[in-house]
Length: 215
Image 1 (spheres, rainbow, N blue to C red):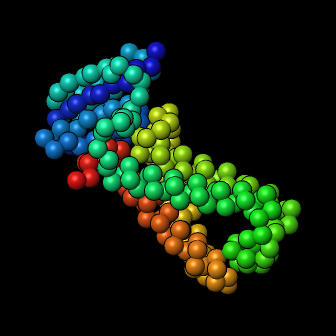
Image 2: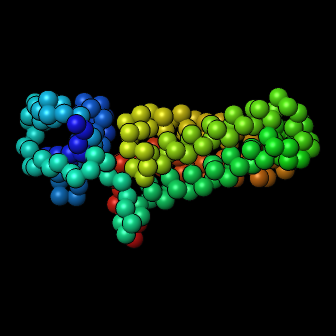
Image 3: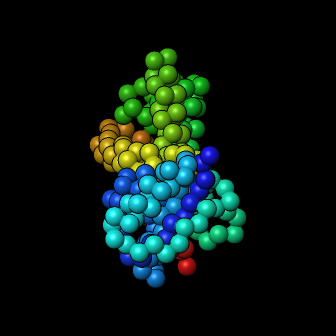
């Protein structure tokens, strides 16, 4: 049965050791210790992690099994961190962009503000399907970013580490395309949106899983 564990060791490890510890989240604490946290499927897996700690020669401080098999999900009353703010901001932006795409797929006459303004008015059927696909993609991106910030979907925690860089690359490409689009309306609306997507996704991608609270 899977349980959530918190393993505290002396010394600091960086994120590159995360795969070595089966994808457990690594948090550097101010007192010089490192907190490994995440779901562990069974006792042999736990013993394997502890053997790796021993092999690194780092003193073990504590091992705690938490009540629920969840990583450090934010609960009501917890202080917001920069990572959480960036992730929520990204989600708000991308859900709004997804809603725009759904409206286009439903026949909204906003073609001048998409696809370089090549199809002003209502999109043709093929582009409506493409708009639905892009809406689904944006929603998926938002879920990955929220998972990387440990706000939802704990099972996505490990995969979200590398998926974040796909999202960062997509946001960067989107920014470039919206800056060079021949449609002034599209450029005015979506270039700032793409910039905010890039900034917020990059903030989450570069952060540790658990950040210090924003004062």
